[in-house]
Amino acid sequence: MSTLDGFWFHFDTDSLSDDENPAVDYRLPGGLSLKDAEHLLSRLLESDKITGMSVTILILHLTRLVKLLEEFRNALGELLLSN
Image (spheres, rainbow, N blue to C red):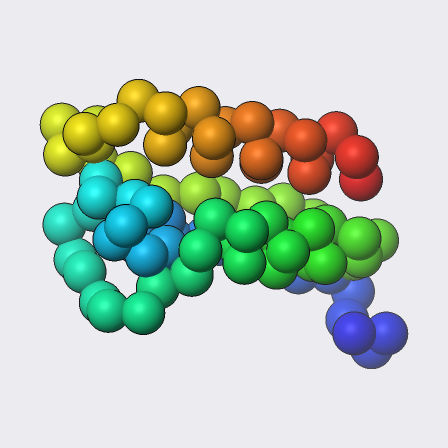
């Protein structure tokens, strides 16, 4: 990444496994666990080249578990604050 001026990271929550995130309208088997996503995001956020990020596709009316939203928010918040 040393030749990059910077990069933007876009994360679709439908890349998470259905077991952990039922709040999507497009499902694929074998998605990331929340721990896998945390690891990926933490590695990207360690870079001084990241210029921004976006998180999309979290359909609230499909969310069966408020706990999912809390876990995702907390994990993302901790990663952003630690970097």
